Length: 220
Image 1 (tube, rainbow, N blue to C red):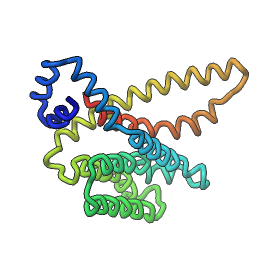
Image 2: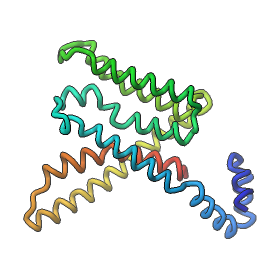
Image 3: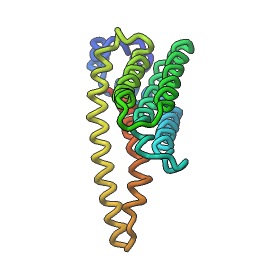
């Protein structure tokens, strides 16, 4: 049954027919197959990219950088490279193509950070506005496995799903944060400043990464 499911992975109609023919066997085989496909290495990769994104988010605090200048220029690099790396890995993109992605990402990092500091500069303002869209297009390229034309609609659908899932994760995290802060307050500990500066700031970048993993592994 597992091999039949794998053979029909790209044929939804026949896959559904296989399910209808023998639902209990299909469910057992699918659950076993799901566990075999999504190994612990998947979670390790997701955790690693989330940790890296969190570290990038806290670079101003770690290296005493100007927060306004750092975040205005590099906000897109906190999440987009991690999402791009996830799809490079899951789509098994050839070396030539992922080197192309890495090269353009590094060029963007260099360009945005060598611009002279001038808050009233139209060049810097336009660069900061358009950089996230540029990184978003690179993410689309990685999502499509180096061929955007074939998966353009799927990429748009992914973006919609990601917004919904990320919002749900953030809401759940907000509720958990409120409960946590409230419990510590009852014990006489005021952790609001620490919690926001470290837990929240480091946790927010992880939400879209976890959301992408959930969408990829459970598209339904």
